[in-house]
Image (cartoon, rainbow, N blue to C red; front, side, top):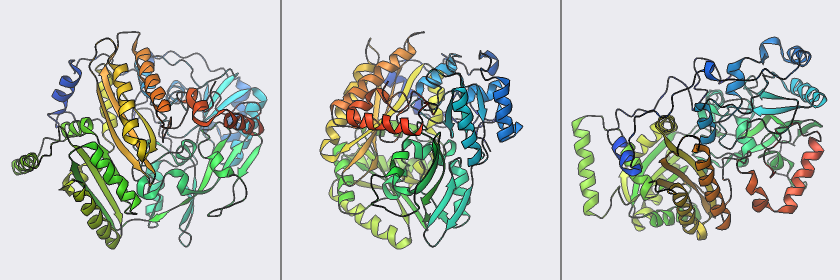
Length: 558
């Protein structure tokens, strides 16, 4: 079933209409944001748009082309109505959400097509090449880098929505693998695997609104990737339809047969073809989920703790470390409802922490998640907590961890309200090695703040370590500032994005750890991978898609 259903979907923003961020039961969040940004909130800068307010040109596809698509896929699987065209023309980046609120759809798709099987995709690509049409693979539409927006100069644009190809085709309990169609949304995929006692273990923030194909196409990471691995670690083989034929990699756990075609397809962002299915590593559903919180006196101490965990082979399923600003923000986000005894208990804990030199205003909060058998979790918990105590970490128990786990998908909805109130709010991420992590953290944070505070604005720049490896970790920034004046909003965001990206490149980070490239990161790809690599990717593109019909304008620099 498509995630895009009129009347249910917040097509101009994140998620579903029946979900919102609960501000009312978080008494501290609004005062914290007002004080940090020096601006009033609750005053609508924007209102949610209606479809009637969106102006679209007529579809450019000739009726003969539309009829050919209907013959291929069935009449109910080809749409040119306004809702489907609008909801498939942009993703969920700050720039996208801003333009939706400004009622601007600059490059709409002309038709949305839902293939039901691989054979139909082969024929769609053949037709598109004949008619000089661009084909944009579409999973859940959650791209924050412009990955699904039409680009280039084609006679028309087809959004190829993979929602009808959403099944787990086969589970091999002996090998612990599953063959899964690329259009399966996170909840659909997990429900089918869980019914047979397994999990993929991939849970990004976009889990409810993203697909296996999208995860593979953008080299995604889930919140539990420290334990389960990134998506490129989970895939054994895949099939990808290109305009020049089907890439079908061998279903083996590893191969030394030359450079990895599999890994060339992973991260290709629809630029060379359409991923249709993949053979994935799966795990038994864990017996125990143990999530808890710790606080360190400072960010550097917490970083040292994570590095030692990874290098001593004490691998948590999930570990997240918030810097001082994000720790204070997280405290403001906490629910203030509940029984009196609970509030008194929390106040007593805060007093105890203060006596021992810890504070949620100045400290670094860690979420530690352990999943597995009881014996595995017991062993890791004992050894990791001992390590953290040695480095100054104070164990807060399971309540903060459970609270984070329960609300981990809610904060994206707060962004919707903040943008409507006139707040620039966005995220970006990078990664580097341990020896460079704190340096990169400081330089990127400084670059973001300076760009935000041009013109005398206040800003709020928060960061956390989100994914850890033996050699290093990722940094995930969230930043806020008063929105620029009317007509200047997009330029303000572009200035911040450019400053942060240049700081990342200058100080040894990667332009993208798990958000992908799209067109927003493409200008830095030459610096990221080098000129020889760019030419190699261009040559592969030419071999697989010589007419440049597959998601043009993405991945490679202009």
